[in-house]
Image (cartoon, rainbow, N blue to C red):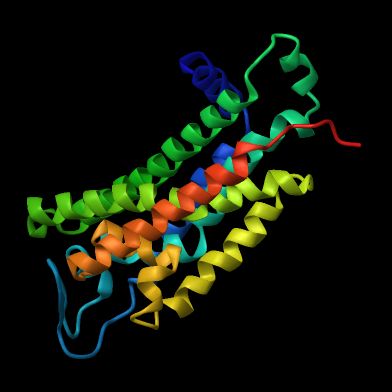
Length: 257
């Protein structure tokens, strides 16, 4: 398994999709930063360790930027690019017609697929930690003295668990798209619709703990909620993982006709 992981890592290092996903993460951070230059007018808002004050720019409030990038990235960008990445590395042997060469080794296709999913899982966490690094750097430049260790560590935990949760939330799509034999780009379209729908699911107190994309925020602690709702969200995400295992179980990489 270690050798398979190393081999897959070497292959994706040469892929433009890796740089596309990293660029997408940085782009959403830049967009949110630009939006944060607007002035907030309204009553002071206190949420957890963060506060937004009346008459200040959003970005001038310590913790706002680290906090705000999470939902924007999760609803609009990162789930789609993570699903695209996962589907790409699963489909690439068939699309690039290299599977025949792999079968000469021979190689265990189940272990190969498992290595690809593990790599996608690690990449999901990496993207969210990269996003945390970008937002923390901006926060430190703007108001380092106002950042508490508790606030930074809380944000770090949220970003890390966002990466874990989003992988599980999109794993059924990653597992399903290769079965379609239509390449890997449908994963981007399906997941974008799926993640944006989370905006509407989040409007319901009931749906937001059952809908996988919004369940991620309960898991990470971004949403302040009860232990029971956190547990329910964890179960939903684990069920997504089980569904992806079921879809991958009998996946065969057959040559395209």
